[in-house]
Image 1 (cartoon, rainbow, N blue to C red):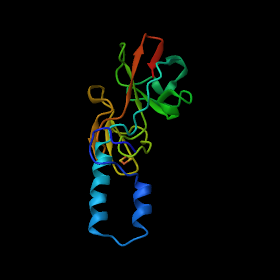
Image 2: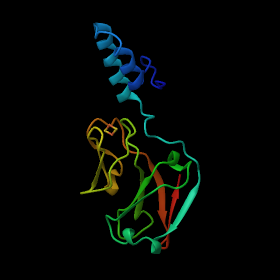
Image 3: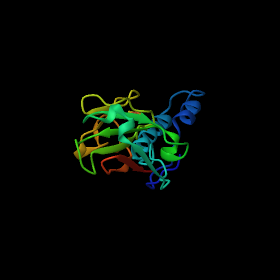
Image 4: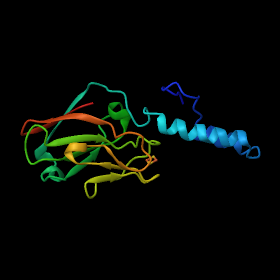
Length: 166
Ligand code: FES
């Protein structure tokens, strides 16, 4: 995995475990472990998909789950948008162009998929990161090891259709 921050070279967890499983734990491997954790925490690219520029519109009338504030839909939109991973479209206000927001489900810690919203947050089942679903901090880190918030996608509402720009 490339380290985009110019720090020590990153080693994937799988490669690192493969390496140390064939030898005794030494001071050197402990040092490598420190590097591994450092890389994981600094790699802001985890969970961030390339933008496609595609606009996807859905009609609110077709989604009963989005009729009330706090409601959500979890869905993928093709194989390229959000790199083929699901997003969560969440209703954060009763009305207005910003009544809906969209976040990726890919955790920025190590790319596990987060759970569905509950109590104003989404939690990652892998290592306990928690992200906010409130309108003012949508996708922001609310706890756990994630180094940055979930990727969000511009979302507008015209009173009939919800349009997401990937
Ligand atoms: S992948 Fe580690 S907390 Fe989500």
